[in-house]
Length: 285
Image (tube, rainbow, N blue to C red):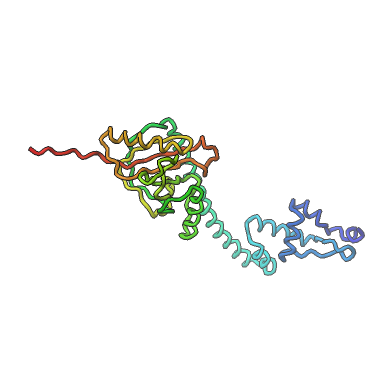
């Protein structure tokens, strides 16, 4: 106490913490990494912060808020002049510009994912209706060309991103499956799958697989995935009634599933079946 009475311009760590509204641990961390060196009270070994320390803390806090790493702050503290300060600020402007670009890309990705969910929800009035749609060639990410258990899909997607160093969105993208009707167990509630791929019409990732352009039968349904087995036969009947040939295996598209919600009643699935008009036979006279 005598020390603080004699040296009224010295402050304890608690006072500095309140002054700058920072935690005691942060002040101790500054000392640990060498960017601040308060003296010690010779009597009780308490940290003593001078007006010079307060100036340094103000600079440190400002640089921290600007996301300067502690190593650079330490170097600036040892060798601070007009040239080094300007150089450091110019460098950080470059870093910030790069961050802005990265944040913009993140924002675009978030908007794309949200747009995908909103678009499919807006089509809710079209549930359970078989429609004939035309699609351009669609770029996809094929993560497995064999049948995968549902529990393995996320692992396979993550493994693909690790191996290829290419990230693609899982939330907001559609996990898709080509269905192997012929080799499926008739007693099962689900069809066997030939492959697993991800697709999003709003993403700009580089695809390794493409759904062919052309006409597709399409049906949207809400709820559990057992309904696929219920509706595919009806879609085949629809194709026959409308003089359409099924030219490839059906595709099951998970627009909204466990990646977006844990409530199965909120799941939205689409079945697409590639078709083409039946060729008319030419009568020979």
